[in-house]
Amino acid sequence: MREKARHVPETVERFLESTLDSVDNAEELAVAVAQRAGFDEDDLMRIGMAVRESLVNAVVHGNRYNANKKVRFSVVNSPERFTIRIADEGEGFEYREVPDPLAPENLMRTSGRGLFLIRSFMDEFQIRRLEPGGTEVTLVKYVVSK
Amino acid sequence: MSVKLSTRQVGDVTVMDVAGRITLGEGSSALRDALRELVGKNQKKILLNLGEVSYIDSSGIGELVSGFTTVTNSGGNLKLLNLNKRVKDLLQITKLYTVFDVHEDEAGAIRSFA
Image 1 (cartoon, each protein chain N blue to C red):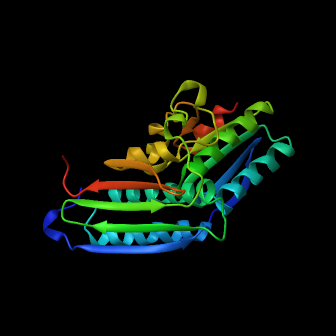
Image 2 (cartoon, rainbow over the protein chains, first blue to last red):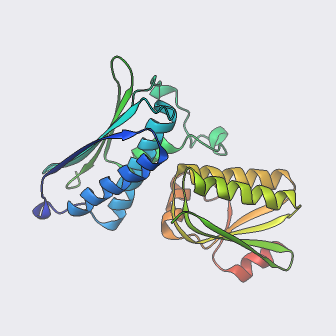
């Protein structure tokens, strides 16, 4: 949870290459903004990991490392909400068809936990399909707990 | 810092000390390769010391699961040692904590293989 009194509005936007370096860069950038916004160590870890998992999805599953496709990444630190948006140019996927990683039959799968971790670590998670193609996820951490 | 792996032998138990980040890319593939190499050498008792792991992502968790399955399928045992709070929390929320045999002291972990 962040203390409102320390809030300093800030907006950052980047267009990232579809590489694993971009994953590291986006995580560092989001954590740096969140740090300036006053989030504590535990929340910084949660925000960083949610961004990492989202970027991996965008780079690996969305854009499939395609050098011609970019990942749009933005962080908006506003008075009530810390909002991160990540958009790829991939073919999209059906969110409801993603298997539940906590189901007994999926527990020993070696992948498929990324979206679950993102949802666990953020206060809000939204996903939408973009036209003509791509997926945008929106991650929100509240400034104060509801 | 990416991941750093080193192995040592304590009796018939191979202890793999893991330090750094186990994340998609170099970190998780290094861990996968190292565990497969141990299985290839017919090591049946493997203790993964995660005490110096600073960060693990979903790919890293997947590698722990993969390693556990690989070692178990070869007739061996893979156990975990020295989980820090973040790694422990991650294994708990993913319901994997009870899947692994987790230990907090090395001597006890070594004895548990007997």
